[in-house]
Amino acid sequence: MSESSVPAQSPRTSSTAAQSTAASSTTNIESARALLASTPVFDGHNDLPWALREAGESQAVPVNIDEPVPFTQTDLPRLRAGGVGAQFWSVYVPAELEGDAAVAATLEQIDLVRRLIARHPAALGLALTADDVQQTVAAGKIASLMGAEGGHSIAASLGVLRAMYALGVRYMTLTHNRNIPWADSATDEPVLGGLSDFGRTVVTEMQQIGMLVDLSHVSADTMNDAIDVASAPVIFSHSSARALTNHPRNVPDAVLERLPANGGVAMVTFVPHFVSAACREWDLAAAAEAERRGIDYRTISDRARLADWAQQHPMPVATVRDVADHVDHVRAVAGLDHVGIGGDFDGTTQLPVGLTDVSCYPVLFAELLDRGWSTADCGKLAFGNILRVLRHATDAADAADAADAALRRSQPDR
Ligand SMILES: [Zn+2]
Image (cartoon, rainbow, N blue to C red; front, side, top):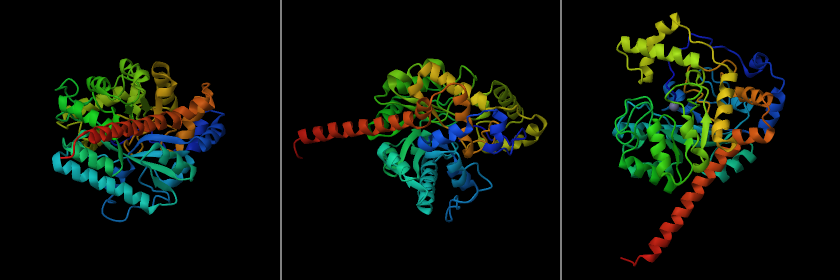
């Protein structure tokens, strides 16, 4: 879930991937489709589970996503058209929830994802490891992983963290739009100046059990503190480059420059005000209007109260070229081995022209082929880099398990 839910009055185009192909004037769309047919997209962040919950799908049998779903940006036909082979489904719950309420809601979202997978056994497969991802893709299904979005989801309990891992959660974003007691968010007033001592303990514990540490949404100080303590690669599941678009949700170059040594991956997101400076200016104006009206802009559900303002002030247009610029920038600063894709579909009401739903990934890859990216380069961006990081996480956890086991063996029985 991004911070973008002001109702979109601006070019909320109805363009499909095919229509937007013409808009991007690329000749490489068929090449991109062929590329993704062999090396599919492994996307870092999709909020379909929350979209389904909001539509009332949490109690009943999950909606059949094997047919077009009119109220989402994601369903199986469009995932297939988009060349998606693996997806981190977000089990996001709002940052306004605290304590037991946050834990309960997160468990319900985990349950929803697991039931969604169970409802579509021929199309989706739960993946817990890098090997699972490869085997599921090889079987022609979409490997389905889960990511929790914000440390509020564990209510400051390492036991809850480990239990969520046991249920299949494979990354946790340290914060969402608000600070939590042990980590500062990118979109809140700094309190700790990064991570607290307990926050460092959480990072260490996550990496010991094999859960990826996701640094999207956190402050730059929190990013640096986490990388300082990290013994395994970190991820940014859905963030773009701050040097191009000065939004606190984006990753500064000084942090991107640390990724080669850490081994991690920054997965570029498509949210217009993260990839377009003009859209960012619009976002600032929306935030100022929210403040004038006494609306807390961090609270996503409250942004609907700006609908009339948005009607009067249409958001500028972001394009696939804006997104490609961010991909190119992350590659230039962090290196080809440290860039990925995290679209944030169904986490934002606004999307760039040409990238309006999950069927549109080939448009981005066509643009990159136009820019001279090779097939092998595109394969790392789409799939290879995040798979490598996931594998490393599991391997590091296995090594930690082995060390623990050795330690336990060295202890006398009690
Ligand atoms: Zn988000």
